Image (cartoon, rainbow, N blue to C red; front, side):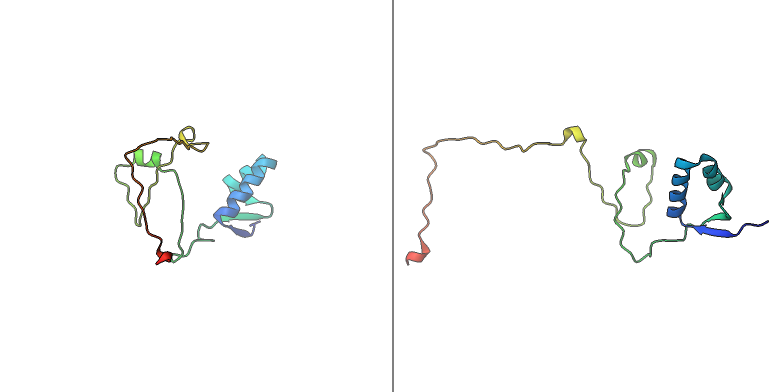
Length: 117
């Protein structure tokens, strides 16, 4: 008996797999490896919920490992790289310091009061 087909987006496939892994490992294996779930066959369709080419996307990722492996990184759009400090190097309190000094060499400027004219 052929089971009916049911399309899954990448997101719905991963969500279902994660839920099954937590509650029923046998069902998880049937779903992920065999493409069978409940009363249907699983069809993973990567084109469901795709992004429109006209949409603007802002994605943040950690690429340091990739940059260490790849000799020539081929990209088709602008790539902005921002260094991120290690947490232990990040300031956790305000850093304010003050110093009083006295100098007879500094003259104060005098600005005439424009409202008195």
